[in-house]
Image 1: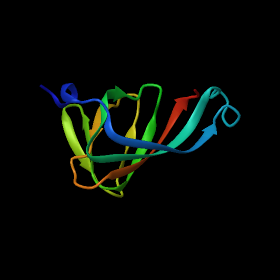
Image 2: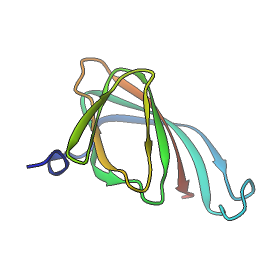
Image 3: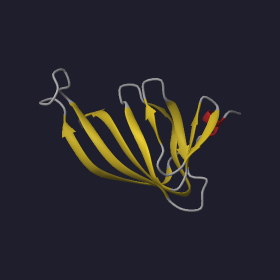
Amino acid sequence: MSNEQMAAETKGVTVKLLATVDLGPEIEGMAGRQLRMRMVTIEPGGVFGPIHDHKDRPGTVYILQGTITDHRNRVATEYGPGVGWPEDRNTTHWLENRGTIPAVEISVDIVRQE
């Protein structure tokens, strides 16, 4: 069974909304979308799942503390503090914290306004 198939539901994750910008007035053609910045904390043993994609929701992630394991394309990659990655239309993944301390990331993405 692949890592993707074993992805559990989200557990041990806290998400704090830090800021948003309504992109409609800022960029032509972006009505109904916002730029969103969140702080995501994944506790040891926590999972940000299940497997999900980023079609129509591009973004970037930057790790502040701890280690996050990103599972995509049947490969598990560990990222530590000071490292980040893009999440584009080709990204299908799930995340987990295999470490012993909370992992904290800053996530910035473009989403449809709720």
